[in-house]
Length: 153
Image (cartoon, rainbow, N blue to C red):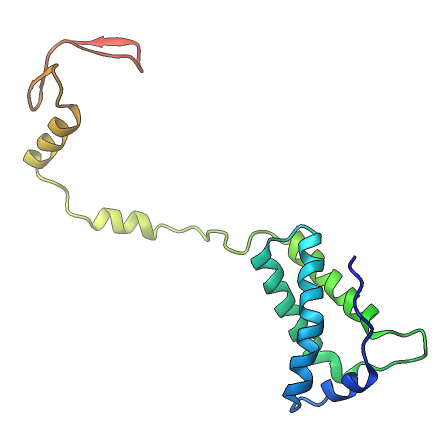
């Protein structure tokens, strides 16, 4: 996984203040590219990596107030790397987001369409099949179908 940069303690204190937009913008400018690169290295497409970065930053924004450095070995970047890794695993392991829900609404729309009159159907048939073997709409002379392997008479 990509290395996250060392976080300044002063920035961590400032980011915990939800009203400090400047600190948050600086935080995002430092960490968003790292989150996106990490997601891309794990096989996510660029747009999905951007979406994931947004999700991770939202999670960080909601939890940053509770984050505390317990001792000298505790690093914010390790916590952020874990949050990012978990978000990537969740994103890659769930099914497609835009899966069709099913239903018959398209079928109902088709059923509501007015049926064409026989003359229109005949003209359409003549337009598609109008070739040298067709004398007039609806009247076909000896024709063969190479797809079916039969001769039509």
